[in-house]
Amino acid sequence: MTARLSPIGPARPHRDRDRLTDGTDGTGGTGSMGLSDAPPRAVGAVLAGALGAVAAITRRKPLHAVGTTWEAELRVDSPLPDLGVAVFEDRGAHACTVRVSRALGTPSGWWDIGGLALRLPGAGPQWGPADLLFATTGTGRATRHLLRPVRHATERPLTTLLPTRAAGRSLVLLARPTSGDDEPRQYELSVGADGAAWRPVGLIDLLHERMDTPTRFDPIVNELSGTTPPSWVVAVREPAYRWARRLGRRRSRGAAWPSSWSSDDGG
Image 1 (cartoon, rainbow, N blue to C red):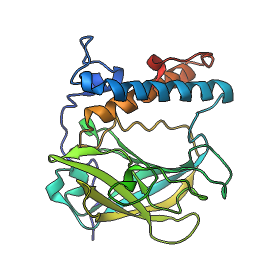
Image 2 (tube, one colour; image 1 turned 30 degrees about the horizontal axis):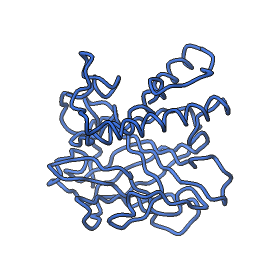
Image 3 (cartoon, rainbow, N blue to C red; image 1 turned 90 degrees about the vertical axis):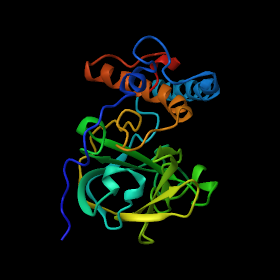
Image 4 (cartoon, rainbow, N blue to C red; image 1 turned 180 degrees about the vertical axis):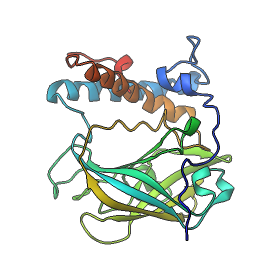
């Protein structure tokens, strides 16, 4: 019998919390980001601006606006303690939330980028949640970092696309459907370290569909305990996620949608 673990792993200080939330180190500086991160930050600013423009026109989330949300379970059957990631250290079952969506919101059967968002309560910093975002890609050493259009959101393998680091290694996670259905309900979760072969760690089961309420998944703030994204990954992602956080606060206060956007509204 597997034990249900909640929360997951020991609490640890989030040494990058201030930097990851507002793009600085809390003192007005840029933390560990240096000149080498300038090109990724420029890319992130361009992406944030483009997403903001789409949102201003459509009056909705620019990506993954429509999806299905599920009560789910991550079952760790093949622990990988050498990674130093608490949730993968022991066998056990972990309640989680999964959202399946299409990036552009096209009808099922049209070409689009499939997405799967996973939230693990207690698996993030300070016993908070951990968010993992998967997109349809290839599975090879290089293609695991390349988006792949599909006709159905999760009929093909999905990876976390950008790497994170754990135990001195570069990690990418893979969620692979265990069936050939257009809308699978189970995925094998695997880990690829330093571009090597995938190592299965467990299964993700979608158990019960629930109302698709607005949920902001943020893998930068809600990082998986035991992992740290490279600074260039933060530099690319942070402008868009900062924009999403600020937009979320505006919407919660009932404010109107902004009519113009800048990189400072990203995230």
